[in-house]
Length: 135
Image (tube, rainbow, N blue to C red; front, side, top):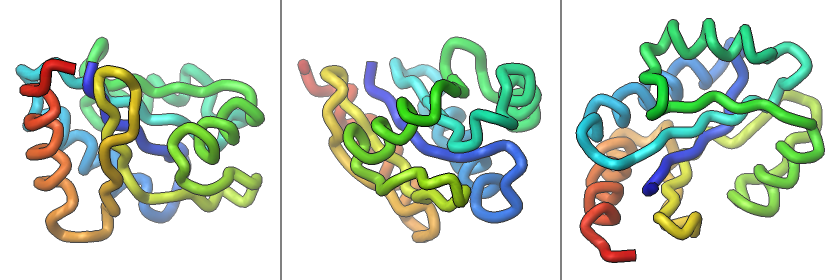
């Protein structure tokens, strides 16, 4: 699948609600496409599967399309730093506010700063373009 990833946490008083609303926009715009959305928590101690499920409901996440994932802190750190190259989860609950577009081979194809006005429309256009690629 082509997919979009971000890092967030459910009790975030800062950018996470905006980011999750933007991810919902991506979900809506690409509803009939073969795109998956993945939000990784940076606060696995509090973001239990039950908390993530409630958060998913709040943002109208479609099951099987938009996933909310948790795991061991070290795994989340490795994903954030080494796979997505977004920085480092250091326990301060500070995190990147960029979305990452991944292709069907799980290669990073773009970064989208969610604080910029055209970022989400560009992400949607780029995801559609990736969907047309053979691999």
